[in-house]
Image (cartoon, rainbow, N blue to C red; front, side, top):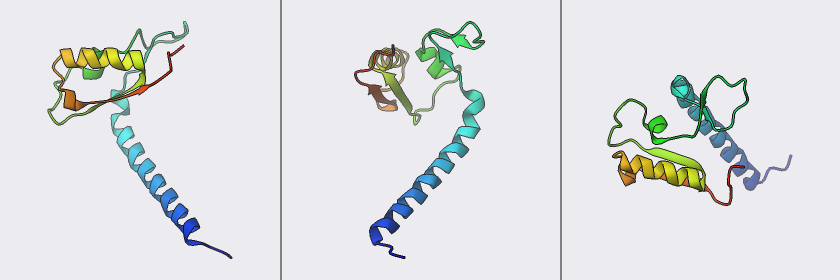
Length: 107
């Protein structure tokens, strides 16, 4: 069996990715019941919220802790709009991390 250090390194990296995924899933399971899915163009069968994601959805009814971070990702216009709303509602610029999908219009 020929095993080079490079192959071994890939195995370690894959193991680390699996461990990160397991940790992420454990965190996700803690917050799944707090998620709100909002669809802008749902089918007639959709029973959840309709419309566009807003700062109100992101903020919820609770006051954010100063050390909280909000990660915004999606089409550029959506990220820019929500970012503007959040800043206007008192969220500090250092609490926002924006990751827009450039060149994607959501259509």
